[in-house]
Length: 473
Image 1 (cartoon, rainbow, N blue to C red):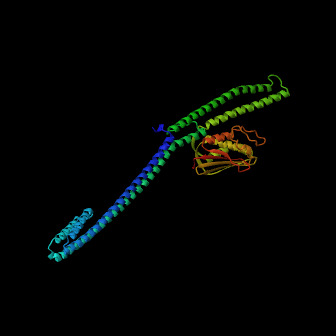
Image 2: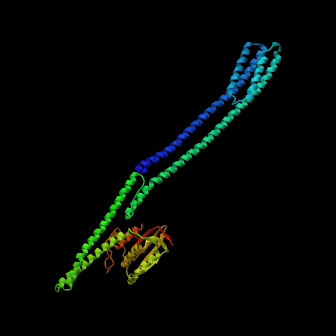
Image 3: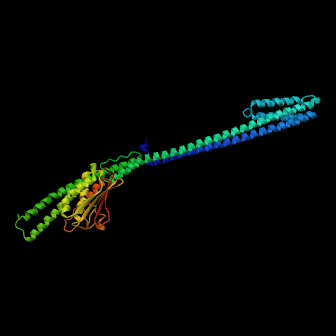
């Protein structure tokens, strides 16, 4: 199903999912804060109601005591009615406090003493003084009970406040955990989506680099979103086209070389017969013309063979047989292989560096080093010095080779690795090269994932080969 979705749609979906997760965490936080606000407001209202009820109970008790004692002394019905109204209000307040805030025993005692006061009010005026003392005693008990009720109310309010604070702390902890969890999950999702979505992009990059490095033997297959799969299919089509073009080029070169070699061989044979006098004795001018023909046909044949050799080298560069190779030993073998050439010119060749190993194609890397050494020998003056240095920088091996020759002209430096290009500075009394030696070096080193470059740091030529993924032996 995901293969039918485009990269853009998946990217938008990932953003929406992460944004939705963070939005859900934010809404949850807002909802929790709203709940806490409501609980805090309700708690404050309940605390005010309880405090007001306790205060009202005390006020009603004071009113009852005043009206009761005045009623005993004056035997006034209005005062007795006021006492009854205050008593009814006190009972209502006591009911409003509720059993969850005031213990039932206190309520029972309070009502018992109120009933005693009510009974004392209904007596003969002759005993009013004695009953007044008893009423005062009962109200002292009511005041004690009111104080106990007020204490219970304060304790209830304190419990509610502690409960609210505990709830606030618990919700704060939960909210912190939820927010941190949402952020952590969002980060993990972002990383997961990033890795998942960039993986096909990395494969695309590797495929494009492979095409640029002429690694055409590796099929390109990109899994992932539909549009990236389509790009992968286009790259695979391009790879097949490049393979086909390479094959066509090779066939064309082989065909052309064959077609040229046959008449060229006939031409050289004819020139040889003329020089041998088979068709009759040649004059001096005719012999000079035959000599020119023989020389130019030889040059043409050499150029054809160089063209075929470069084409074969470019084809073989794509077929590496890597093996663990001692680079220092490989360099010394190439130097020893050309000992006759550099000894004939009285040159000194030194090899420096530690024993390093790398996974390389031994034959092709040896050919590249040999070509650079051959160039250095050709361009070095008699009695000169050629230095070859092997070194390592992190995971990259450097092979530096410099000579004391005339160097390479500035205008030639950008083109020295082009096939069949020969610079303007050539050694005297030496046959000009074919112009493919450095091109083959470039092809072989690029096939290894490395590079060869000319460093402008001396009077002579200084070439450096860089090989990745090397390690000490």
